[in-house]
Length: 254
Image 1 (cartoon, rainbow, N blue to C red):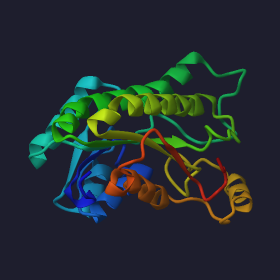
Image 2 (cartoon, rainbow, N blue to C red):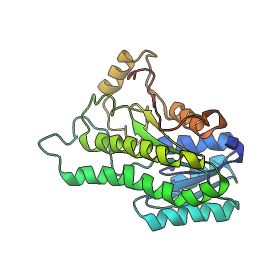
Image 3 (cartoon, one colour):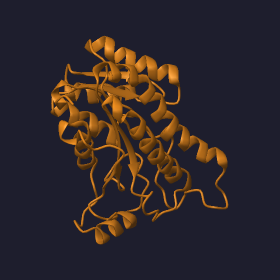
């Protein structure tokens, strides 16, 4: 797999939070970066401006296959080569609020469907849009973003965690099928991050509990998770596929 500074990378949901940190991390390493956004053009443009002329903000709803195909085609046309690295980070309509979450008594199937559409349908659309270019190049990297809640649902965010668990099954099946094409498919699972828009509603008590129960005594940052994504995209991970790397400071050890 080519070095990071030779890659064209699409990151979904890259206008804020973890996605923005991932985009900036690839930009720091010299990659050409597509900053995908759904409803935040100004934020996406700010992230692209931080990276410079190697970044391109592009709008697309990951749930729409035509929009995702247009996103990948726009990237290839702009940079003059196919996308060979794709990071599926987009999170649809979710806040980590332990007090206001849906419970076993109140949650509805539509809540699950929303998260399955964002996590798995979005991943499928992105990977399928990138496959022809990856196969033509003879290599590819796909990295999904999951959560340590799959391993340890300390707070039962039913719909969110179920969507991320399904993404793990998607990842391993795709890794099994696409390895012969030189394409690796992996997951990075962060803990609760300090701090993103999605975790802004989380109470100080929850963050304090994480610090007290994590070997490092800290809450993981978006930048720390972003560096793990870079590993999976790098030549050093060429023999790693179908894996789920938990990046949470040791809170969940598996």
